[in-house]
Image (cartoon, rainbow, N blue to C red; front, side, top):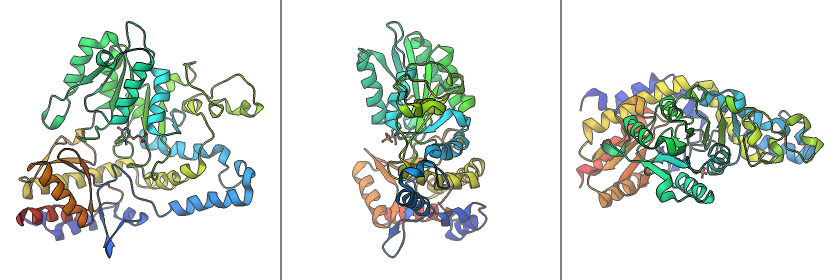
Length: 424
Ligand SMILES: *Cc1c(COP(=O)(O)O)cnc(C)c1O
């Protein structure tokens, strides 16, 4: 083993890491007498220690102020969503008026499709990536059926054309060149959940818009993971969840982005009172006048207790900054790649692209020996408190999160896999 691969080297990298102190801002899950090694921020981010305090403050306002909490307190509930709005806009590279925290991701896909999937007999197809996350698949198929179209012909799935199940831009371009005229909407992931492949959002949007298609992004795995320039990408809309890299807590309120060019457009939408123009909302009139921007898509008054944790997390993102987080993320995931290649390449195949511009924190690792060995390895890791996640039939996803993972965690994972191999 060269120096690079030793636990000492990993510790030295941690000692030199300018973001190392952020780890202490999180609760580490427990394993036996110590801490687990957590690589599952792609699925559920860890709890910031400040969450409890932020949440308790709202419980206190509720007990002490009751309905007056809407107008009093440090942050009146009436304007509460604005407190997370600016933090989210920063993380996503959007204007404040373009983002809103509301509902959950799958609900937001539907709400956005009501406005941006406007099928006509000539142009009603939807383009997505093959093997999309089931909820996205269900959403687009049910929308197609709702409008009277058959997903068999109206859903165009772009097949992987690269090793590891990855998709080239050329492949998307070909599909759009062939079918573009009948495509109403391109719904594309920022990062594909299974492969970990990241896409050039501006390029996807350009290809779609060149063909006259609306374009939306699912940023479930990209938000809080990659620095994004969502406004500049030119997308019509985007949706994401806040419980993955954004550490907003299980089932956290999701997010939606509507590009500024639609801010005052009278797009068809499913409306609710919280989307009504703020100044006149409480006149309680029957006519609907949407608030400009993404907030005009809100239906209900926001769940304060579900939004509060997001404030604790977004404060950490604002403090660390997406650029610094990305710098560390590249080093951390690069270190994982390096160690896998050098020490356990016979056990695990990296299916996520090698090009760092095409990935975030996550590496998807195919277990070469197949499903049964893969499950055995995964269970072995879990039993030792090393938490990644399993995707059938043979993939382990490992996502070192730059806010709380250490180089030593990566080193520990690789050493554990190596030891497992050597005893088989
Ligand atoms: C995590 C994830 C979801 C989850 O949707 P919810 O509505 O938050 O349960 C949907 N789509 C993708 C691509 C995801 O990664």
